[in-house]
Length: 434
Ligand SMILES: *Cc1c(COP(=O)(O)O)cnc(C)c1O
Image (cartoon, rainbow, N blue to C red; front, side, top):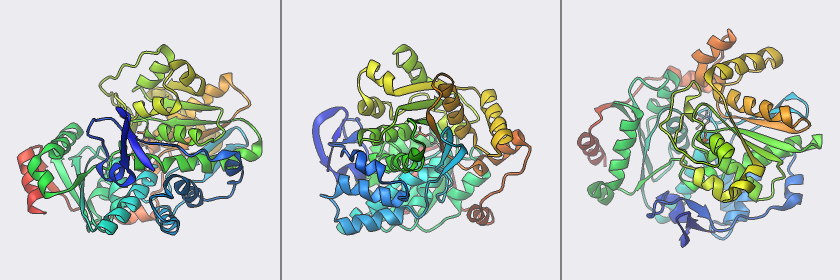
């Protein structure tokens, strides 16, 4: 399998290069040269396949010429020791695809763990080392830290804004040790991101290290997210109704992965792009005008993105034509008040607890169903409600339990290096720990 750049369709690079470089030099995004059409038989035969079974079948279709099949099977099974079950709220009408059973309790585990497994394979084979730099406002850092923990050949440095991530998120970043280092920056998320971006362009650092990114611009975080759309379809096809997915979205990696599954032949009637007040994509679907904006803060803060980096992939995959895109994709956006009301209503009606991001997805689904009754709806649940414990408890007035594995992290001591938002200091730190 080769990859091209969205800015230059005639460019072709190997799987290894797309994986380790993350971004083509022309600042486009890597895309697979061909997307295998899996066919109706495949999707109709997966009702009881686990995430790793489906993941292996699709990975084989994509990468059999790059990685031997038995090795690929081992890597995929190692990446997914957890499943992504569908929970039914109303038979054949309202379902929740729970993507939060991985180690950091958010869907980003799926992409981070698959990418880590693939990187580990190539680095071991070529005896190389890679240094991953990540800036995080919370969720990405946790998934990357836990996904890359202990992977040979990989060192991870995570920068996060001091005092601006939740206690639970901070513990995920700062208590693991081994190959994971956390830097607590006296500044904002944007300061952290600026330090990382400058590091990627610094010639001395690039001579010393092979620097890499684990952001969702890396196509290997996105590919595995297509597997769980297929997994969910397998679980609801027994109802014999047209299937729609509602994806709570920020950077639009998750929805792009749905588009990838669609290209593989997944029988979906409609995708729903559900956002908070960072609504550039729903507005685009309404007006045809794409207008990125500075982000606004909401309670579904992992979706506070004003200029989604995967928008190009989304349009590329579904269709570059606005009119045809509109046939398969519907957009809705909601404010914080509506989100809290939905969390409360779902709890009252179904005794089910949603995180605020998942509640935005649920709102998108119910809005669509008002004018399209009779469809089987699946909302993607992107995080465990315990990740947003204080907020969720204040809405549903009931304690939210933290899963045991995370409770254990909460008792571990924090290790972080405090630093000002100063590039020279950051660079010196990296060079000393080389
Ligand atoms: C990252 C994240 C999102 C947004 O996903 P995108 O792929 O960026 O659209 C939604 N919900 C949660 C909980 C997240 O962590």
